[in-house]
Image 1: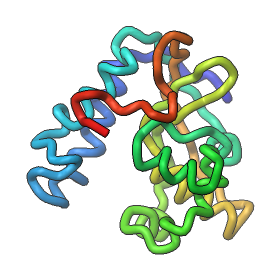
Image 2 (image 1 turned 60 degrees about the vertical axis):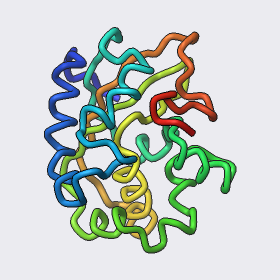
Image 3 (image 1 turned 45 degrees about the horizontal axis):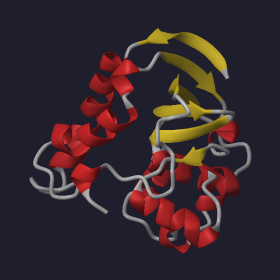
Image 4 (image 1 turned 90 degrees about the vertical axis):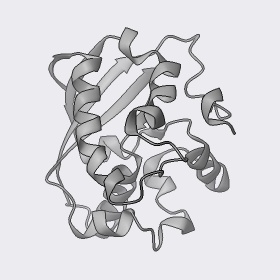
Length: 177
């Protein structure tokens, strides 16, 4: 990874919300686990990792490096990881649920030239906090064409060892199991 700059959680969150709100509007008004807004949907996860308290840096990385990172501890992603016994995106991409997936197929047909991710580093491992579908799509595209490339920017923070993320059974209590 190549360091770009230091950044703040506020800047990261603003970009994340700006990028996701149009997707929310294209579904229905009470999507995303029944939450009525982006903020009420995402805030329990943001609070749980203490995102605003972490020190954030922005890096440029390669597609092959990013698809070797692990999925975050989100209920549906952990279920998929347990099914195939791996949290690594290039291995997760082999899960049968991605063969005809409503988010993956459109991404693969028009993958962005640049993607921005949010990830957390704990010990020597990197766990993605935001960007799971893009990394699955990227892994599948690289499998089809090993020379496929794009620009990847990752907002990365080290997370303290006492933080429960990325434990397998982690789901914020506000969202239930």
